[in-house]
Length: 173
Image 1 (tube, rainbow, N blue to C red):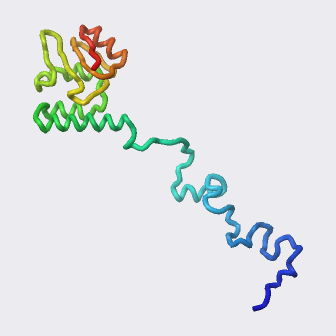
Image 2 (image 1 turned 180 degrees about the vertical axis):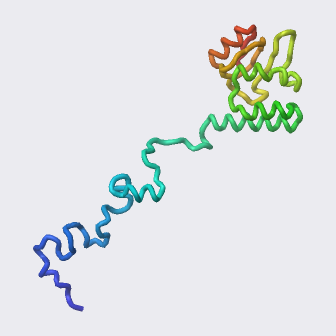
Image 3 (image 1 turned 30 degrees about the horizontal axis):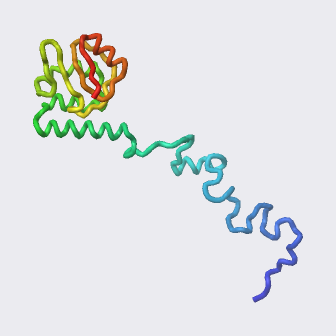
C-alpha cells in the first residue's frame, strides 16, 4: 500500500483539509461537538429539540418535598374517614379540595363537623382536634364568627389572633 503524499502538504496552513478549521478530524464545520453553542449559534436547533431556555436552579423531586407529603397524608386521612362513614360526601369534597386549612374555612364548616361527630359543641364554644382530619397547621385567612377551641400542631400568629378575638382558644399539640 503506498504512503499518503503528506510531504507535499507539510508547511501549508491546512495540510490539505480544506478551510483553516479542524476539518481533518471528521466533524466538519459544525461549530463544536455535542451541545456546544446550543443557546448561541445553534439556537434554532435547541428550540426544535425542545430544550428549556433560561431555566436555572434545582427543583426538588415531588416525592421528597415535605409539603407534598403533608398533602398526601391529609387526603389519605380524609379518604379513610369517608370510608368509615365518619364524614359525609359534602364535607369530604370540601376538605379534600383544601390541602391547607384556613380559620375562615374552619369557621364555615364547623357545624357540619359537629353533625359528623368530629367536632364537639359545648354551649357556644366549638372544640376540634385538627389532627383527626390530618391537618397539622392552621392558617389565618378568612373571618371567624364563632368561638372555636382548636387543638393543632402549628398555627400562624394571625390565625391565633383571629380565633382568640372571636372568643375561642388555641392549644398546641
